Each structure stands twice: as C-alpha cells, then as structure tokens.
Length: 489
Image 1 (cartoon, helix red, strand yellow):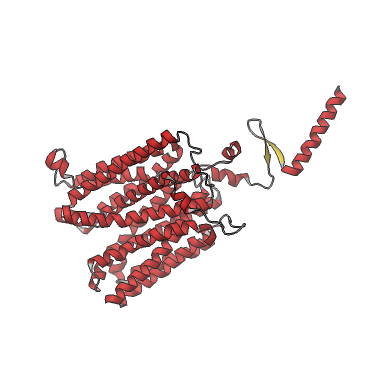
Image 2: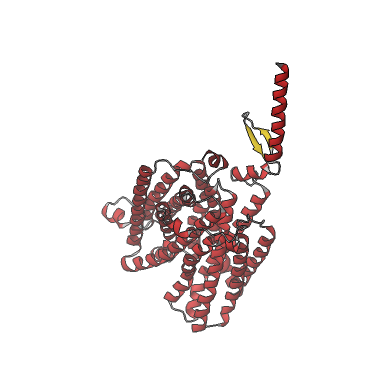
C-alpha cells in the first residue's frame, strides 16, 4: 500500500512539473485555492491598477500619467478662459460686431462637436500618446500666433481669429479626448474618482484664466497673455513628451478602431449623452448674462466682487467634484440616484439665483433684491451639477460594457469622444439660449425656464431608468470587466 502511495505521489509530482513547465508555476492563494501564475507577470503593477485611486498606492506609471494629464487639463482650460477678461472689448475696437465676437468664442464648441467623436474613433490608430502631446504642442503654437493678431484689424482680424481659434479647438479636442481615454484606461475601477479629480483641475484652469489674462493684458497689452500662455503650453508639451509613459499598443494586428455607430445605437448612451449636453449647457448658461444682471441690480458691485462671485461657483464645483466621484465609484449602484438627485438640486437652485418671479411675486416665499440669495443659489447650483455630472462617464462605459464591447483603450476612446462632443454641444447651446431668453423675457424668467428644463430632463431620465430596470433588471457588469468576471463568464 505504501508503495502505491509513493508511486501515486511521484506521478502527481511529475505531472505538476510538466504543467509548470508548460503553463507556469502553481501558486497558493490566501484562501488555499490554486491558480496558475505566470512568472513573467508583474503583480505589483496589476494590483496598482486594480486598486483605489491614490497617489501613494498607485504605480509610478499611474502617478506620472495622472499628474501629466491633470496639468494638461489645467493649462488647456486656462488658455480657453484667458480671453474672457479682455478679448471681447479688443475685438469690438478692431471692427468685429457683438455677434461676431460671440461666434469667435463659440467656434471652440462647434469644432469640438465634430472633432471629439472623430478623435475618439481613431484614437488607437493615430496613437493616444501622440494625440495627447501633438494636440498640446499645436494648441501652444496657435495661442502664440493668436497674440500677433494685434497687428491686424477689420476683416483680416476676424478671418484670422476664426482660423486660428478653429485649429486651436481641434488641437485641444485631440489632447482632451486622448487624455481622458488614457486616464480612464489607467484607472479602470476608479473612473468616476479620476474624472472628479480631473474636473477639479478643469475648474482651477477656468478660475485662473481670466485673472491671469487680465493681469498680463494690463502689463503688456493684447499680445503678452497669448505669448506667455502659449509658451507655457509648448513647454508643457515637451515635458509631457518626456514624462508620459508609453501607452498600450493595441494595433499590432492592424489598425484597430471602434464602431461609433454601434455605440450610438445603445439607448443608455443616447440618454446619458443627452444628460451630458444638459449639464454642459446649464454650466455655461450664466456666462454671458449673470454679470450684466448683477451689475445693473447692485450698483455697488465692483469687477473684483463679480470675479469673486464667479469664483465661488467654480470653487464649490472643483472642491467637491473628487468627493462625488469617489462616492460614485464606491457605491456604483447609487450612480443613477445621484444623477436624478443632482438634477433636482440644480433645478431648485436655478429658481433661487434671480430669484424666480414664481417664488417672489406669486408665492412670496423668497425675498427680492438680496445679494445673499444669488450667492446661495450659485453655490447650490454648483453642488447639484457636481452630484449629477460625476457618474456620467461611468454610465457611458458601463453601457458599452453591457452591450458586449471590450474594456479597452479603443472603447475608452469612443466614449471619451462622445463625452467631449456632448460637452461641446452644451457649451454652445447654453450661452446662445441664455442670451436669447434674457433679451426676450428677462433674467428671472430665463433662469426659471432653465430650472424647468432641467427638472423635465430629470423626469425623462427617471422614466428611462425605470424602463431599463424593468427590461434589464440585472446588468452584465457594474463596471469594467475584471479578470474574475471574464473567467466566470
């Protein structure tokens, strides 16, 4: 009997050695289960990518990637907003009409609408790292070139403004789409947290742009702001070329692109993209109309006071965005609840900003001519936008995953392109609609209409979520596929 046991043990040992040589070594997991482990794998990097979003726990590649792309977002949106402080007045003096000035600024959104899906579709064909760095360098060159328009006037000035801003918008769209796709691919299990942190840098860029632009304009005229910021962009492009690590090459079998049409056929993608448009339009709704309204109503407000009021809105959003993203990642089943709740909070805030005649003249529940009411309304609006916007990218990724699309840089690029396009549409609709509504009905009724529109879309999303739950009560994934899920499938 002992000899039989020894013979069986020897057979198992030889079989194990054969399996080890053919498939890798057999490792003991903490719970006692066996798993085939490839000796060439690097588990440290794998754990980092699957763990939480933390600069202390992340791998060096993740840290470099996040820092570089966050810096890219800050500089890009600082460049976008730097013109608000002085360009409209300069353009009017050089022969442009008020409508033309509006279109020169809005061309950013129009180009982004077309370019975002294109760059998302061909992200891996062009190369995500090349698109990120090339877009940043091209944007810097266009910004420097824009500063030399101070030597032009009239039709030449207007034509060159459109041409340079269009190319710059194309470059920013490429850089932004690539950066979003790279970052979400690097942190697949913490997409909302990463996007929330990225939004903080976006908000900081929007906050820093106007004061930096105003200071440099006062110091050196029209040309200096563009030369300085453009030079910083070019330097950042070189730094990113050195620091950003090589990205996963997913084109070894040929040029690989995703199907944008397949993505657009998904109801969840359509409704969530619509939500992104609504969020972007609401955030930009107040840009052209709030300052004139407050300046007319409160004569004692100085430009510094106005800047602080806008700063409050962006600060609340930028500070709380990472928190909402973290909640969306930790409580994935609550993301849709967060979206509905955020839209309702935002709708309530819009009737406080003016405040709405429905609450002051008819119901008499809010006071008139109180500056603190506008400030509370703005802070509440920023709170609602953050809650509703944080889960959007996750929702789009999950919809693609549920439809059977692979969790890869290709899919991330498609979603990033659609996300960028939706944001661009909203950035164009918001200021255009607010200007028209304020001119026709006045600021209080315009913000009331905005609140009604947002609340209506909250009802639409709620109906869609109920129908989606009834038709598909159990999603295939509550996030990107993990190795365990793939093995179970």
